[in-house]
Length: 146
Image (cartoon, rainbow, N blue to C red; front, side, top):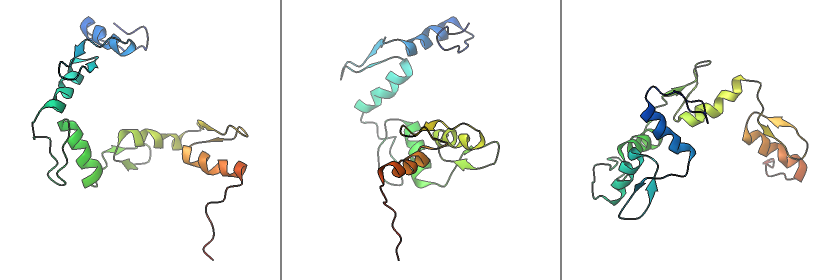
């Protein structure tokens, strides 16, 4: 079975039924404490921790509290460690987050998704586009120290 809206494949009909909520506005799991509604049971379960006095999601390095174990783990990896578990399979460069690896992957392609709205010149990275746009504004924020 597959989703006719996005093509994702499912082995069980029930999983497809749950997945279809992603494409709708249905939010059947409602919190009785704050009224916030969720599309899935796991999202709702995670939300309930917001109302809990459970202190098990405290960072032992900086005393910050988190809504869930995964949030705390991500915080520790991003802030307190040098761990970079997301590695480019083409060149070996590694990153702390999956999204940063995804952004980086454009380096190995000919794709240039960031287009200048002034001259239609295209760039691989948004940062490159921002620097380029200064050509059109005559802005010169980087001055020589001498």
